[in-house]
Amino acid sequence: MNLKRKVTQALAGLALVTGNLAVAQTALLNASYDVAREFYKDYNAAFVAHYKKTTGKDVKIDQAHGGSSAQARAVNDGLDADVVTMNTTTDIEFLASTGVVAKDWAKRFPGNASPTTSTMLFLTREGNPKHIKDWDDLIKPGIQVIVVNPKTGGNGRMAYLAAWGYVRKKGGTDAQAAEFVGKLYKNVPVLDSGARGATVTFAQRQIGDVLLAWENEAHLALKEFGADKFDIVTPSLSILAEPPVAVVDKNARRHHTSDVANAYLKYLYSDEGQEIAAKNFYRPRNAAIAAKYAANFNQVKLITIDQEFGGWTRAQQTHFADGGVFDQIFQPQN
Image (cartoon, rainbow, N blue to C red):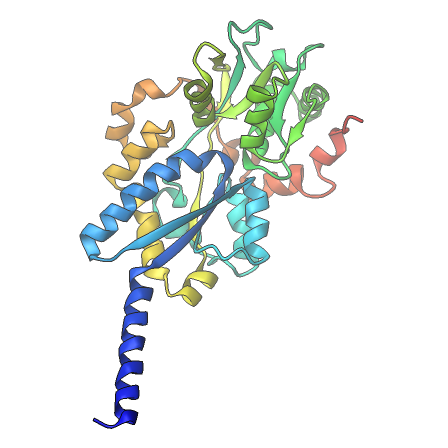
């Protein structure tokens, strides 16, 4: 065999090995919000095993976490995510408006592409020494409230809208709701950019009397720091959260990961995916699994964004866009 042919065959073999290695090392990046870390850590391991069993292929899942809106901006600005798993619709709608995500993203998976639901609860110091029971208690003098900035985190928007909706459901006007929410934010000593940062402020830095938290984050705080450190308080009314998911089509096409990205999000609706969600204190869409884990979830009356605020697009423009109601009522403390 002449030298040229040997070199050609060697290069061909190297290309084959490299190609097989690339297939074997398929990777996805999931850009997600702060308090979904533990859930996706468990879910990713289950999906990797499922994908290997059903396709014979290996896949690696990487995670990037932060405030939901900050994550959306990062993906828009070049974070190379294949999928996004956010906590509010507006963050994915933003990516759809810039062409990063498909316009019809919400129709690609069941439940408007929201495989789970959640809500906002209160986390207080053990024994609830300030006797915080409902939203009215959050505006009392001397109460320090820890909550996420609604401009950067979806759960901050959920907390804001829940407080606003509480006033409206009691028969108050929008002007009265704005006054109430303004008083609430005057009791906020630190406005963190993301939910995990808010939890650190409250639980580790020992700032504040009450944390407005995702249901799953409140329960995880008990598990991580000890049930003898904090109490979960369920207000008389809260808000339905529907954390949405989407394939980042622009990136997935370039990475040749569209199929695995779709499979990754679809598996969230499987029995295993729903069980993992329930164990991590996310409310599953699957009714049977929700019933099985009913003890994990606090019974609370829930309002919806669509019914109370005319949908996320309207709520975002009215309350959280630059110059919106939040900017008008929030006065940062010096």
